[in-house]
Length: 238
Image: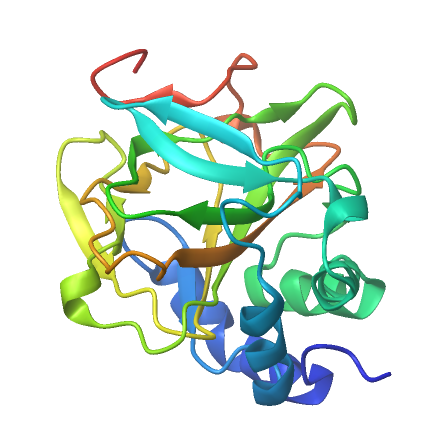
């Protein structure tokens, strides 16, 4: 079966987006629409687990910080999702990421620590935060986040926009609509603050569905190095 993405198209886009990615504010990022092959993205949306499906959801439920469901237990995923994640952790895809970002020697996380699939129900939200910077199991630095949105027919009144904040975590710089089959790729540092603080407001039964994958390196630039930390939430531990 072909990859869930068109490798030739993404390779071309990687060349086109390399400079815009590096210059983007408030920190390096790229927004790519129609990211996956359309028919495959539609299939992923159809099989995406609901909140009551047996995929061993981790349930985050701190009202002032984070309310969502997440699972990295790929053995419980529907086959199309599991295969798509393997494709997005494959050598050809890693090569695309390296070409687009200029970050060499990238490695995927086969354990999907903190990643995998995410789902927001009505009222769920994610406070502004910077992600954990060190994977203790792999002993690697976290360098990139990839988010792929899989809610068909998103509407503005559903909210759930991804917000990119300045590196002090004080001001929203960009708001990204979670359009179907849109991907957001961004640098992961101790100051790359982001989240979707406005609660998901779709009707019952319509969920904010996404794949979240993270990529790592054995080292990172000295100016980006910080002591290992867990997620830093503005107003709490950051």
